[in-house]
Length: 236
Image 1 (spheres, helix red, strand yellow):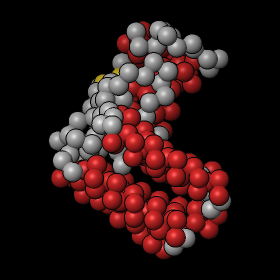
Image 2 (image 1 turned 180 degrees about the horizontal axis):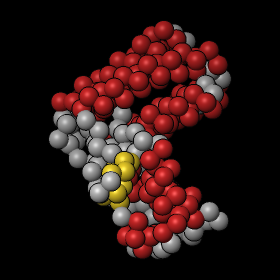
Image 3 (image 1 turned 90 degrees about the horizontal axis):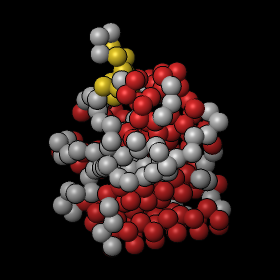
């Protein structure tokens, strides 16, 4: 059982929700998969009640659907739905960069630099897709730390809708292109040019949108070993 080595916290529903989200992120559960309460309860070592409650939370978050005869299934986004999500991300995150530039502090800027160096080191060392995705997300959210909790929460929601993520890291030349995009964003931030930074972020996200549309047959960036449930592969 995947959760044998994990201590179950006070809220069993929260525990199941954490494990489900981790398994979705890691590609252990895929789009279109049927989620059977009995099997999940056995897998996570709990009763059916917290599983049922956790599934309701995921349904409210738009990550699963309920069907009359099939029960709960992981939502499988159409190409058009994925494009719409990317467009929302591009608008929201380019705005977040503008806001971050207005509120930038030396501490946040230092965190952005560290996050970028960690991602660069990982790409140089041929790290796993899951690790690269985690570090890519860390860099994005290091920038958004200068915004506000409500803005970060909205962006987190949009990122979560790409679960489980389709990895673009295996696409030839993608890492080089991503580094180029990030360099454009970070150069503008370092120069204090909010308009250029916002535009670079918008172009970066839509670039990823175009790549995903071109490589729609790619599969999730997982599974990965994550006994603690901390890994979070995400598409750029």
